[in-house]
Amino acid sequence: MILLEKNIYFCGEKHPERSIFDQLIPLPQGTTYNSYLVIGSEKTALIDTMYPPLIDRLMKTLESNHVESIDYIVANHGEQDHSGALPTLLEKFPNAVIVTNPKCKELLMAEHHIAEEKFQVISDRETLSLGDKTLEFYFTPWVHWPDTMFTLVKEDKVLFTCDFLGAHHTDGELFADYSKELETSAKRYYAEIMMPYRTFCKKYVALIDEIAPKTICPSHGPIYKDPKFIMDLYRKWVSDEVEKKVVIPYVSMYNSSYEMAKRLNDRLQKAGIETVLADLVHTDEGEVAMELVDAGAVVLACSMVLAGPHPKAVYVAYLMNLIKPKMKYFSILGSYGWGGRLTETIDSLIPMVKAEKLDYIVVKGKPTSDDLDKVDKLADELIEKMNAL
Ligand code: FEO
Image (tube, rainbow, N blue to C red; front, top):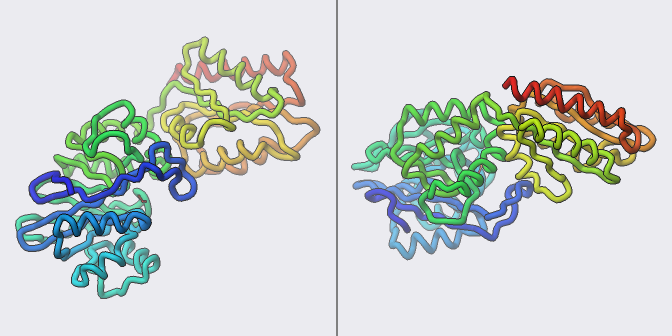
């Protein structure tokens, strides 16, 4: 265990070899599952637990550090990467009580079949005394599930935010090094997990400003002894502001769509607009998602496969609809052989994307010089719009 503050310890685990999260999100560095022990003068509380495959490691850590009693296990969130060890912990510490909110209790009972009497349900802003330390709970639904909450150790101003402000980041030490690499990991994590709930994130950034913690301890990634770094990043990401940046994810079977995407890209770049031309065959979705955090516009370029858009473009459109980026403009470039429903299908996949739709350009076969003129016109419109942001 690693001491964070007087009688507050980290007892989590790094899992750098994990390659995917929720069978969906690629993890270039794996992740961490941060569990914390708060020892008060009268009671001891464990805050969040462990991902099921690593339960033994948590149990070993507690044993080798002679943790002989746990009175409370605070569940800030029911997802099993944090709640997986609850049944094992209850066996080892039969007098322990799970402290959580009503929604999380419901999820935990369904996931782990834990008996109702093992829970102590708290309300928003309720406090729980451990003797010389007091826990205060803040209900913060939707970062990440409807059950999520924060726990504060009032006397030490240490705030446990569970998934919120986390990062799938295992390079480096337990404490944040405030590096560009950490910023990238945190941005990618925000894009994949928090961005769909941007409105809630905004609210909780304001809540944390009000709490003014000295230390922020998320349940994934490093601990922030200086919360300003991560808070300033979130302030930027959750704001309505976008960058003068156009993201162009593309998939092109015989280069026609690529030719249009490249033409657009080069004209935008020449005008000083930042672009990201992302080959969907070789770029992982997490990278595309990360670029969408602050993109001003997205132009999806794709080939047709049979009678519809290429499945790799379909996947990105579907993902975009899930994570709801704040971009202001959207368009499609495409090429077909004999027909099909390219734009209609993509449009049907993005009802939650509120961006203004600019003219779509779909050509038969290889783009002609007239078609490329249309791409230039779209580029000029985007240049004007990006410069007006
Ligand atoms: Fe890290 Fe939503 O669990």
